[in-house]
Picture 1 (tube, helix red, strand yellow):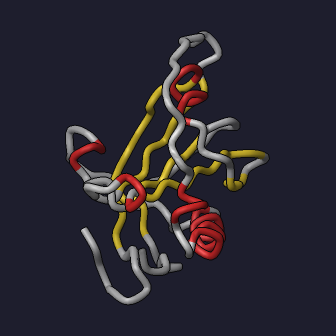
Picture 2 (cartoon, rainbow, N blue to C red):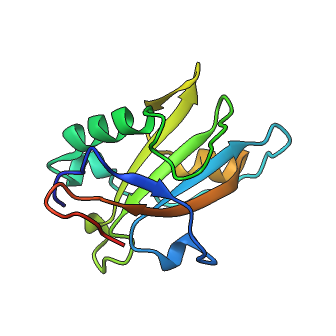
Length: 141
């Protein structure tokens, strides 16, 4: 994957599912009453497969904390988790890149992606696509 643009825009969309999008964001909201128990086989985290993970993670974290990062008035709650996925349609799993952030003290901070924690204690709250993704393009839909 190329370097993520510092102008990336997190947009709403009319898709029925994030699975239909190649690049998407997914907001998870903590549910204190949810105590599901999912298990599975862990996958290699993107931080080990993406040579640009550190710089892209920093760019995404910085951008998420800018007031115009989203195309809608966003009101996030403590413990919200935002998962950002690139190349969702890739045939090879290691080409699918996932970044995760948690909302703490009014800011997004980088978080290790734990799909089982999200499935067990969070509800999917909102999702959308991203525009202006790569530094070498003006728009990717």
